[in-house]
Image (cartoon, rainbow, N blue to C red; front, side, top):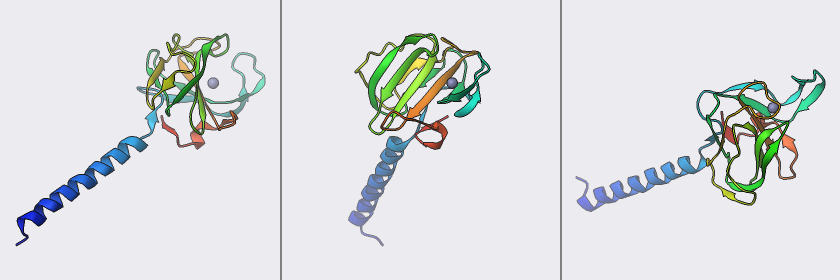
Length: 160
Ligand SMILES: [Zn+2]
């Protein structure tokens, strides 16, 4: 027979271990950058520009999804830039600890302001087709700490 006080200790220890594992899994869980069903419609690298037909380096991946689907910040950070231009449409750029990220062609303005803090997984916009875009998608860029773009699919910083 195991004495009662040992049995209770085992339950307490098991509860602590399970809690630590649960917290670890929650904290390290990768953010699904675009909500709902998504598909990569264009990869990082050289391609023909869909508008001009010229060879052009595509500095991010295009994640196509239904218009209005949520876009989330892949990591905690601070809004580096937010705005609109004829190429990227409504966009937001976020500075993280060791990376940066960029989300373009959003349905409308993010509503966030430059310098504002953003939590990991926070909603930062909605999928749209603003700017030079052939259909609803997110032009998604990941930068290293020197603002050099990298292949997002090689970073393991998010989920699709
Ligand atoms: Zn793109």
